[in-house]
Length: 408
Image (cartoon, rainbow, N blue to C red):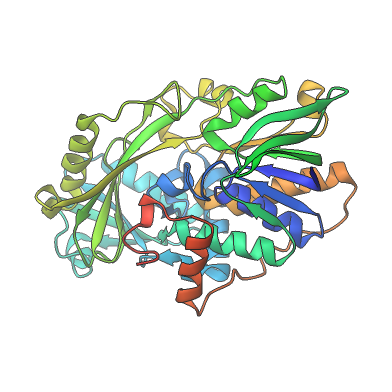
């Protein structure tokens, strides 16, 4: 048996961010993850650091969150980022009014945006589609999730947190109606980890962990495919300037471009079909932006599952075009089950802010009066790529999202 102040379940970007935030506030935190770190949604994303432009015209608050956290990550984690900006590209058959609305919304929200003609955009991207008419240049970047998660976990540990990959939770301890810890599998059997508070940061799997405490968290997971093709030298993220749809993002890596994505509801985030049509559609649609990818060699293909929160999805008809926020569910208030908090929804871009919101809530419950410092203190290994790669290996944080970039 072991004990901790807070047990964080889930080793994606948000989970390790919560462990880091709590540890920096002096809270004894332990994080457990059933696989290696970064093995769920984070490591199977397209790794886009949003500027907020994607959501500016539909969800100004979500866009503000994105540009705010974009700036934070540029400061604290530049070694975990790639790319050099983003283009929203309006093709001949795209609605010109939609382009104008997006640019105006970005300017209203202080998201930097420059409107370029197609010829000017081709100076950076010579293979840009022949029917590109206007381009909005914005500060999108690329996140390398393996590096981000490993560096965050290492910093959490440096501040006193315990990080335990390959330690799946088999049950939650519920005593007197309150969550008091968890039973965790180890290489030697099972272990009881007692905790004053348990945080459910399992993403698309949040409903399964919540059920162990007798509460319902209705998730609506949706799968999406990413296709990495041989295409070196793309300097910027390409976004199709239309309402979000299949195959509208091209993300640059060193020697490859990642094409994404689709959105298909699934019943089980661990067991769902992978359909060839999704790959074909992504390639076909992304080739509208960057024609050479239609014939480029496919280097790898992977699917990820978005941790969508059911009640939020019910309120957004055709909601893929609207930014999805995050939700911190305090089960003492919501369900009469103290000692348990769940975080769901959100985006990789806003993981640090999500972690701060959870840590604020948990510290309030524990009577800890300490401010968040995660936006001000840089992540480690900024000047030591070998140590960063070693941390990725140690935490078993390698994932398909950036397999061609991190730890080569």
